[in-house]
Amino acid sequence: MSAGGRRPIRRLEPRTIERIAAGEVVERPASVAKELVENAIDAGAQRVSVRLDGGGLERIVVEDDGEGIPPEELGLAVERHATSKLAPDGPIDAIATLGFRGEALASIASVARVRLLSRPAGEEVGHGIRIEGGEVAGRFQAPRAPGTTVEVADLFYRTPARRKFLKSPAAEQLEIVRTLARVYLARPSVALRVSTGDLELAVYPASVRLTDAAARVLGPEAARGAMALDAPVPGGRIEGCLGAPASGAATSTGLYLSVNGRAVISRSIPQAVRAAYGDSMPRARFPVGVLAFTIGRDGVDVNVHPTKREVRFARERELLDALRVRVREALIEAPAPSEAPLGRPSPAGRARMPPPPLTAARSSLVQARLDVSAGRSEPALVAAPARWELLGCVDRLYWVALRDGGLVLVDQHAASERLLFDELRRDGRLARQQLVAPIAVTLTALERATLAAESEAVAAAGFDVEGFGPEAALVRAVPSYRGVRAAAAALAGLLDELADGVSAGVGPGAAERRAATIACHAAIRAGDEIEPATMGAVLAALDAEPGRAGSCPHGRPIFLALPRARLDRWFLRSGA
Ligand code: ADP
Ligand code: MG
Image 1: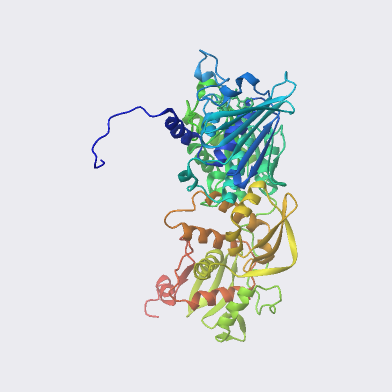
Image 2: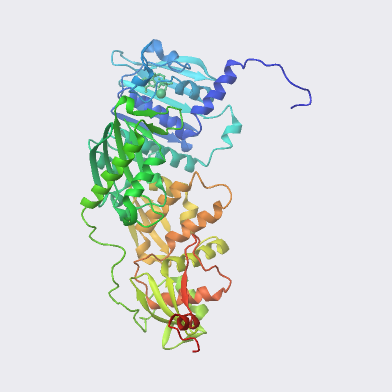
């Protein structure tokens, strides 16, 4: 309560109401881009182009080849609660369009400068209006092919407080690409292009088959071994494309959902899909893919709150059960992956000893680690420091070693991840290995947008990457531990996880989570064949700091130690 006491109740000024309402629709540039593209889709467009300046904060221009707006209706289009998509007394649940509340353009126009230029099929030229401060500030004519152009400039120029909550242009640009990828996967029959300056950010062609669109957005890596799904479910049908169990992601945001052509979010659907994968996918991994539901009108309630598109199904339990069954069936029918990354016996069986001499390609980090332990090394076991004796390796995953007379098993991923995490927290970046010849890798539009937004994190992981052509990047250096192996898969994995983290990159523990993500993708993986010298270096480094945590940053243990005393107890040798 203010010192002056209570103020009388007054009605808000229309302009104030406008700005409050605008906040519901327009949170950031990505929400503007989404509303404008959805309007183009509703207008029957077959191609939509989105051009951005400054991550959409300076300018977003959306052009379409849809049915256009008659000149006399241009002013109405930017008025609140004015829409062409609802019959005067038609039922609200009969809506087939993405919008119908008549709010988006009005909201956008109240927080930005807007130019609207449109030519319906019957007109000779385009007619346009300019809106400033929410009011029509001018009319003009310009030549244009049939269709509509909406230009939104200087977003939030009247509400600087709002601007402060926005991220960097690169991060906003990434959010736009993410959002539009969702819109495209919900309506893949409409071609969508996103560009900034003369750089193409995303080129999504009109696709008849959902699997083609999915491969376009998720990338060839995820599409390989993906399972197609097309089956009836209670109340409708489901079509989809789900990644093979080995292609899981760190979060469930790689599963794109739509209902009747509208991108939606859901908690229960990803859970049901994850449950269907069961143990075929490693724990803490989530399926990637696209699921498109076509559900009859009374079977679904798409809560059409302008920003939150949580979906609710009338027969949710039955639908989720059916979904689980369908996904399981598809998994069983899927051809076995040609190369299992796990569970494959190591051809060497045991670690080879003595190891081959260090080559120039060996990582500088490993070299440094070896230097640390060199003083304690025995000549016969070049790589292993004095306290460790390496015996072998199980399935390219668990190292078997002796230490102080006891048996120790080491998880190669967890151990190297812990080292890298600590190093990152200490030095801010990880050692890298320059490649003799750079490697070209293909990246998806999302991954390239993430590369631009997260260049620091990518560099901290040890990658040196530069853009190369519209779809590819050149990798010049990779994280030391993984070497050349890291070039394609680990880079894409890191980018995908960073893309998910952009919005969650604040709050307590955010720096640790980021470091854990980076360390995870730079670390040795299960299935990597590791030379004994490197194993020894990792073990020595773990020893170098006795206070080091015994688990990886995600909390998984590094060691299983079976000291002599425990072995004795197990074998009932009490007095030994
Ligand atoms: P809604 O989409 O909920 O109707 P909007 O504020 O987004 O509300 O748009 C208002 C109206 O402007 C739409 O109903 C439509 O008639 C017209 N409109 C907006 N964008 C376009 C477009 N790209 N092509 C044709 N008409 C459009
Ligand atoms: Mg709309």
